Length: 115
Image (tube, rainbow, N blue to C red):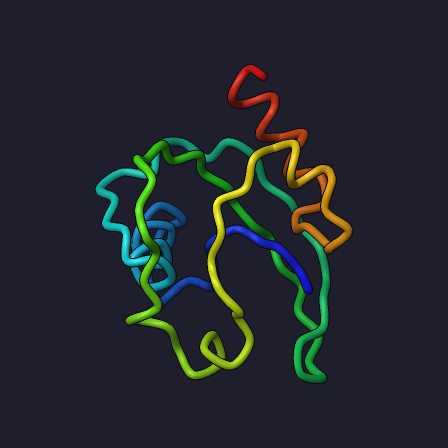
């Protein structure tokens, strides 16, 4: 099982900020107005259901109170592949035997949060 942050593709004409706002709402139910600046990016290739993707990702750091994520707006693919949500500490991300994406997420969070 893999662990990964909220995200997805762009709809036509969206900026990275627009996509972050929409994807956060669709995947968690949380409504954010401004995701702030892009805090890091990465580019990689990956396969999903027999198709190869060349992807560039932009990451934002959004501070929020703890809330119960909602799956109300999940797509059919998300419903079939996502097993749930969970809040993780940086130490838990480092200690899990499961794959975490991006692989250096704990390092980025530590740097960004000043831990």
